[in-house]
Amino acid sequence: MKAKTTTAMAIQEKLTSYLIIGAGSFGASTALALKKAEPDAHITVIDRTPFPCPYAAAHDVNKICRGDYGDLMYMKLAIRSMESWTADPLYSRHFHNSGMLYAYDDAYLRTIIANWEAIYGEGNAPSHLLDLTDAKQRFGGIFENADWSAAERSLWSPQAERLKHSPVMALMATLPAESLPPGDDRVLKCMNDTGFSNNVYHEPSKQKLSIPPSKVSQLTWSQDMPQVLKDELRTIGQELHGGLLSKLVPTYYRMCWDGFTPNQDFIICAHPHAQNLYIVGGGSFHACEFLPVMGDIVVQMLRGELDGEMERRFAWDRPNDGHNSHFSTLQIEISVIYGVRRAFDRDST
Ligand SMILES: Cc1cc2nc3c(=O)[nH]c(=O)nc-3n(C[C@H](O)[C@H](O)[C@H](O)COP(=O)(O)OP(=O)(O)OC[C@H]3O[C@@H](n4cnc5c(N)ncnc54)[C@H](O)[C@@H]3O)c2cc1C
Image 1 (cartoon, rainbow, N blue to C red):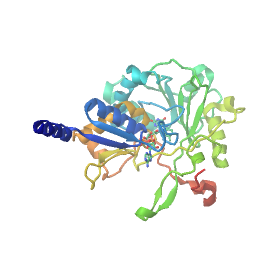
Image 2 (image 1 turned 120 degrees about the horizontal axis):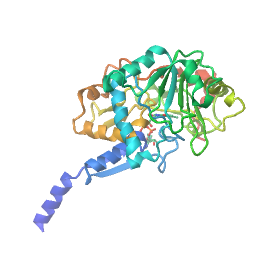
Image 3 (image 1 turned 180 degrees about the vertical axis):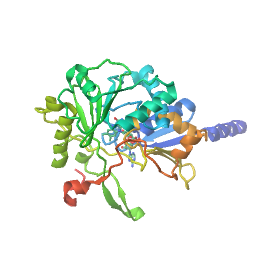
Image 4 (image 1 turned 45 degrees about the horizontal axis):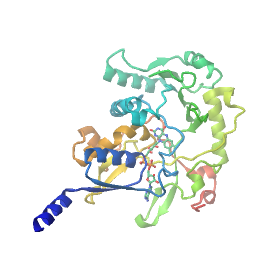
């Protein structure tokens, strides 16, 4: 009996337990990867609401998965992720390969091509540059009347042309913008990619922090959107698709909140001071596409096996130089958009 108890205790000591706070992109992916890596581990995931939480950044009608990064490390990671999105039945049933079209400045698009060629060799980039006039004539003419006057060049990432008449469209124009083609739900999603913050005083740390509002309508799909932002979306619709959208009125709007780091590198590291506490976040509006690989990276971090570049770039204390996203560094305080602070209060409704 005594021997049994000792053995049981020894097993108990060997068993690891993990508490994951938040079942969004990082938390869900980490839970799955941990379960695969340590089948006997006890893993608990908690969230604010039953899964899926409608306030999560990950909760949406659709997301963009792209390989075209101006940053080589993320491009390589995106290639790994895309293998799962296209081949792993867990992910592939949610993945619709529409291709993606960019109308951006020439220099940035050339960096993307250079990165593809660094991986696949000269002349083997899967994306290619197009003149804007050429791009507009493609895709069944759906961009014929679009106003891309602020862009210089176009980049087409075909991957596969299953929905070739409506690719994901990314445009650097008056405002940075994107649109995602309708799926079976026939919802067309248009985005204003201008970043904004919501700084409020945080009593426990006695500093101002940008945090999401607690008002549910300002976290989820609703009509609770400053008129100026609604107006900007109309401009964006015109620039992205020309007259095609002129008679359409958006059914609902959403303000998007995500943990945003100064250079958009994620944070995947041990807490610098608290033992057995780890920080995984800083999605910076591009973490969802890495869902299939994110958890594996967390497991590598927990085991001290992250490669040197990731260890340095995903650390808590880091230089934060450069930026891996082309346009998201713009920061406007949300109260400036509303004009008066009290219009954007922290009431819970
Ligand atoms: C509208 C929008 C569009 C986006 N589009 C894209 C895209 O096209 N492609 C792309 O790759 N990325 C996109 N992103 C970014 C991507 O969704 C995020 O980077 C990613 O989801 C971040 O993952 P996360 O786990 O840190 O946060 P989340 O996905 O927000 O998950 C965090 C979870 O933690 C929970 N939580 C918070 N506080 C607590 C608490 N106190 N206790 C318990 N649980 C808590 C939340 O409820 C939530 O479920 C978009 C983001 C938004 C908001």
